[in-house]
Image 1 (cartoon, rainbow, N blue to C red):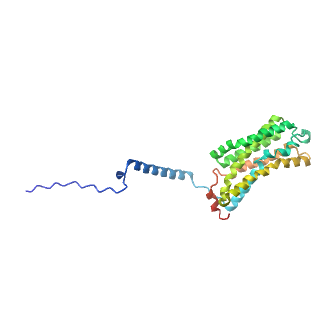
Image 2: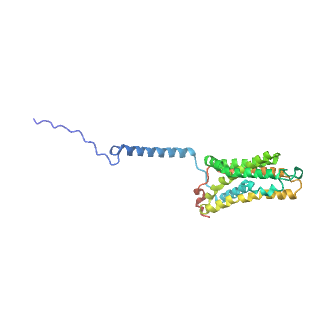
Image 3: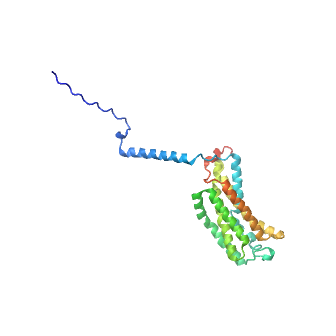
Length: 259
């Protein structure tokens, strides 16, 4: 009898190219990391919910107009200081003035204007961390508080602190509005220039106060600053309702087909 041939075990099929066994451990780890990141992105996007709708053309125009108005109301009040320095602030209280000395007026402006150049370092950090809505609301609230306390001030120190507050919050208004240029991608720089340029309108606010004080009976500085604080209070509340938590991006301008 011939010996029974031994059966050989079936050989394993060849591994496809690109399989884990045919690749180094480093390549496999890299692929696993990519899969993990993709899963994390899908998970985070599903938890965030739907993104807010981009504003329409009319809404974009209204947002820019509202931003200009807010900047004009309080963006640079302190730089119109000269409009009331020689009249309202040094006139006696019996005439509706603040009764300050020229030295106090000069010292107050020096301190407050210096703080206005320091505030972007702090309010800029707030803008990066918390977004336009909270930064704009905070900045408006600071300017509003400064105007209200200025209307109630009686001593040189109180006037200095109040003026410093309204000067400190102003730059935060401008910084919080820069992102509006993204609503008009084709005219981004123009829109940013218009929005930030309206700060010059606020320079004339104190000159308007001086004209009202000079020509109106019973229109003292306390009344004018008090009413301006009330307007800023409304602006503060509207900031929370209008502005987004995240800055507008280029895509929120719908490609700016209308220019």
